[in-house]
Length: 492
Image 1 (cartoon, rainbow, N blue to C red):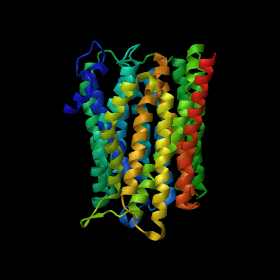
Image 2: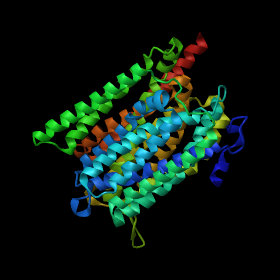
Image 3: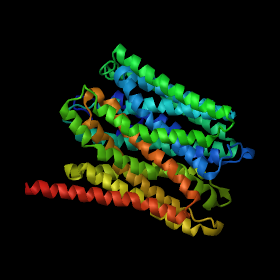
Image 4: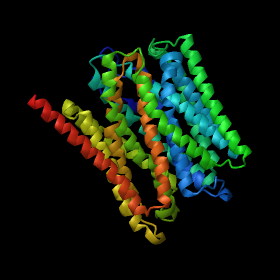
C-alpha cells in the first residue's frame, strides 16, 4: 500500500482525501489484472512454439507469433462491446467484476493440460479482458470532473506507472514456472493473481459511493434485443464456418487465425462509424470525435510494432540471445519484465516533465515521440538480427535497448492518448469511446499478426528495418501537419 504515496495531492480531486479509497481499489485491481496479462504474454508464444515433447503446441515460429498477435488483437477488439455493456447494461462496477472473473476462469482453463482447454481459455480471457479494460479506464475518469483534465492525465500517468510493479513480477513468476516446471503451472499462477484482483475489487468498491454503480444511459428493450441478435448471428456464423471446416477435414489453427485476423481488421472502422453515427450524439460531439481519428490510427501503428515484443522478440530471446549468467540460464520469458521495469523507473521523470511543460507538450507531440521511439526500437532489432546471423547467440543488451525504447514510447503515448480520448468522449459514451482506443490498438495487433508472417520470407534485418521506418515516417508526417496547422492559425 505504500506505493500509493507516489500520488501527488494536487492530482487528486479537490474534495477527496490524500489517499482516496477508490484510487487504492482501482490501483490494486489493475495491478492484479496486469499480473495476469503480463504473465500470459510472457509465456504464450513460447508455449505455442514449444514442441509437443516439451508440453507445447508445436506450432511453427511464424504461426505461433500469429496466434499471439490474433489473441492480443481479439482481446483489444472486444473492448468496444465490453464498453457498451458497461455504458448501457451493467454499469462499470459490475462490468469490471464480470470481466475479471471471466479472465480468472480462462487462466484456470489453460491450466488444464488439454489442447482444447488452451483455446477455450484464450477465448475466455479475451472476452473477460474486453469487458474489464474499458470499464476500468472509464471508472477512473469518473472521479475527475470538468476542468480537471491536467489532473486526470497526470493521474493516468501515475496509475500507468504504479501497476507496472505487478507487470514486472509476473513474467518472473510465470516464466520460471512455465519454462522450468510446466507451461500450465504458469497459466495457473496468472489465474491466482486475477482471483485476488476480483476479491479486493468487490470489497473495496464500497468506497465508490454511487460512481459507476449503474449504466450511464440504460439500453432500451429494443436495443437489448438488437444486440442479442447481433451476438447470436456472430456466434452462429463462426460456429457454422468452424463446423464446415471440421467436416471437410481441413480444420487447422491457421484457418482460425486468418478468420479472426480479418474480422479484427474490419471491426475497428465499423465500430468507429457506429459510435460516431449514434443519434444520441450532438453535431459537436461527432465533430470532436472525428478530430481524434488520427490518434486512434497512431495507436494502431504503435501497437503493430510494440505488440511484437511478446511474439517475435520473445522468440528472439529464446533462440538467438545468450542467456547464460554464471552457469544459470535466464528464462527467455524474463525479458518481458524489462518493459514494465523501464516504465516504473522512467515514468516519474516523464510525468514531472509533462507537468512542467503543461500545454506546451501537446498530445500530437507526445504521439509523435512515442511513434519515433517504437520505430527506433525496431531499427535496433535490425542491427541485433544482423549480429545473430549464422546461429550466433548475441548479447542480451540488444533486447535491453529495444525494450527501453519501447517502454519510453509507451509512457509518452499511452497515458496522454487515453486521457485525450476520455476528454473527447461525451459522459454517456465514455466506455464505448475508451473501447475505441483499445479497438484501434486491436487493429494494430491484427495487422501485426499478419505482418509477422513476412518474417519467414524477409531476412530478419530487412524485416525490422522496414517496419521500424514506418512509425518514424508517420511521426514525421504528423509533426509536419502540426507545424502547418500552427502556421495557418498564426497567419489567420
